[in-house]
Amino acid sequence: MWRDAVLVAGKDLRIEARSRVTTNQVLPYAVLVLVLFAFALDPDRGVLARASAGLFWVAVLFSALLMVQRSNVIETLDGARDALRLSGLDPAGIFLGKAAAVMVQLLLLEIVLGFGVVVLYGVDPAGFGVLAVTALVATWGLAGAGTIYGVLAAGQRGRETLLPLLLLPVVAPVLIAATRASESALNGVSLDVSAGDWIALLTVFAVIYTSFGVVAFGPLLEDQ
Image 1 (cartoon, helix red, strand yellow):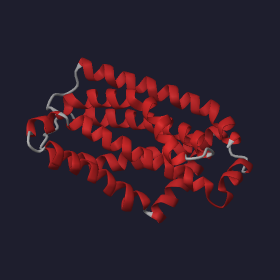
Image 2 (image 1 turned 45 degrees about the horizontal axis):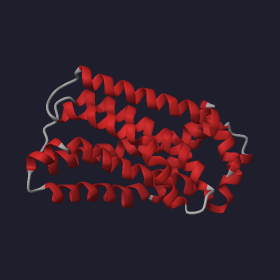
Image 3 (image 1 turned 180 degrees about the horizontal axis):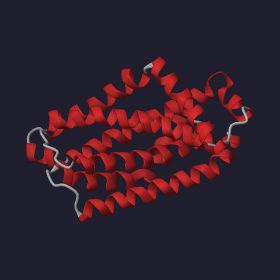
Image 4 (image 1 turned 45 degrees about the vertical axis):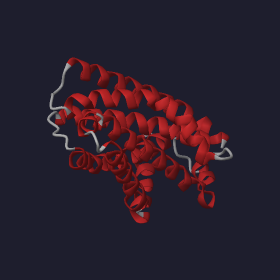
């Protein structure tokens, strides 16, 4: 399973490195979302700074939708999905590999967006450890849930609009918990009990969707 996961993740990351869709399309889109938020809230810089954590994670969530859709588009070209079914790879390994590829791309995107938040919103982050742990666990949950619902929507009509309808309600707890956990760090306060509780909730969410994906990804892939 782990060998297959490494193979699939490597394949997806190589495709993205060659196509540069993430760097040429998704990254500018995410930065533009931050810029638009800055314009919308510019009259009151206090509100902008206080809302920076939530705005950051909204931009990440919108970008995750694009990355998950891209991850599934790769498998619909030239019968690649059928080849994946017949490859003999462990479905759990396929799930873990695709989720890992999305997670790596999202983490790199979050680094750039983090600098964007500091420059555009004027925040002075202090709890870098809290931010790092929150980003890691929240991205793990987003990638796992996105990979499951991405393959679920891939074989349906209107999959481009169906995926947001399926995924956004499910990952709302991730958005809320990640925002709350990040707020203390972005406001200059290191880890406290509240942030730890939100990070624990993010971890539970990530473990649940990873476990579900490992078990259910095979049947979902066969149904498409």
